[in-house]
Length: 207
Image 1 (cartoon, rainbow, N blue to C red):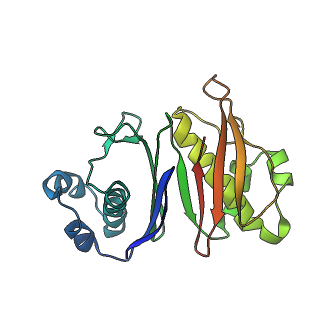
Image 2 (image 1 turned 45 degrees about the vertical axis):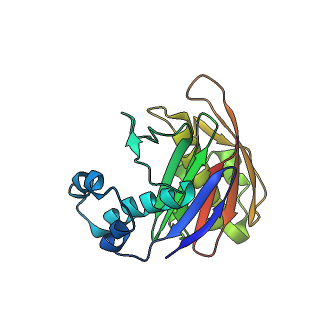
């Protein structure tokens, strides 16, 4: 379907994936560049996600740009100075472009599964702040924030409890999060926005 929503400064968009991979490919021009990669993708679901990201990027930038990848898997745009972050979940793709050195975005479909795995990524202080009336949603915001932060710092062997820290916050349908990381040695401080939508949670960096 058309772009679900978009913002500027930062350039951010979410695409609801309802098209087949063939339909998405028909919306792009650089098909000869894409085919070698598509042939390596075994599932239709993954092909749709991969192509939806390119279609969404084209919509945001007003032109079709190729996405390249660093050795650690982080995406970037060889023909643009903007930092790029991408994410996808069940039926949705999200793209973030920012002028700052690092960008981070994560989108996650709403489900209660996160409740069962909270001990893998929540510190005791973070966990104590979770709103019991919005447990799954609050935990998903924390998870998405740490995923976005992980993409921003581009470090290996990151422990989501020991290295990625979210300042506890009261649950709301949208807001800002303060975060720090202690993995890189740079002691970085970050601000992220979050939004709770009917189908998904979205978190993205703003500084």
